[in-house]
Length: 77
Image (cartoon, rainbow, N blue to C red):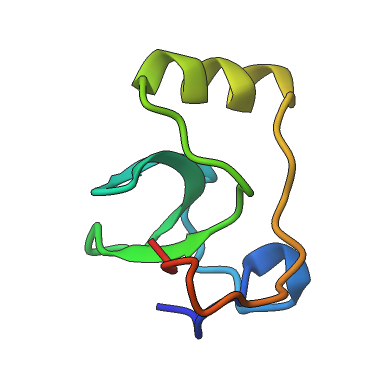
């Protein structure tokens, strides 16, 4: 798992897994999982309520990447 606010896009180690739609209590997001399926990093700025919407954003490239600036009110997952 990366540090709060850290992303692969801003320099964290690549976990060697594909960028994919992941899920947390906050919603669906674009990110990486570890090889064991644990959350590794959230790369997208936003969360989506519906998996299909997040998958469409990933497939079309229509999503914004996080910059790595950590907000303590923004959970890492």
